[in-house]
Length: 273
Image (cartoon, rainbow, N blue to C red; front, side):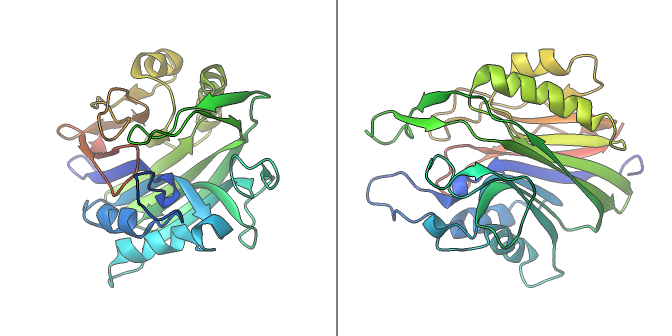
């Protein structure tokens, strides 16, 4: 990107289109989240918790659904899904670590979508922890805690040929086990050192802002300031982050409620700096 050019990016945990509110359909449906994302007028969308052909969400390719919504009948967006696990996350009878993204395999992971061409794609897989952790249900329900196994995590990188120059965009969704998420962020930062700059890393890191800033200190990455993003209904925690190297935000980042997701999406415009 040249000085003065901007790249607008949105990152959000799509929660596979799940809606935990009373009376909501039990089948995850990303349609509303995708429609809301299409109103953000951005160049790149980083989505976490994306289903791919999973029975629980009707066998839908949610990345393709999101791409269609973002394209809006105009030029087709460029997209890629990266599988963290095959099978349904949290289901010990079907979930297994994905050694690679296999598009014929029902999976769960992250997605990157760009209105500009992408010349390179890269994936990094990060091992799960060996623990099972009680996870609270969404704040608007009265459901009890459930115990779920940790899962392998994946990062997806794209070299986006923006009009003002190429930018590397990375997205990920790190572990809900805090010590494991910290280790994964260190691993991810080390891996990202080999990717071309300028670079933006965006996603649900499952870590508070002070911890993220401490872990990336000295790596050339700076966190874009944001408000709390979780839980979406009454946000108190900053779990969704945008980190930049060679880029600076233009104005303040904004937060957006997309459909019934339990995370707010972060939107930021970036320029070379």
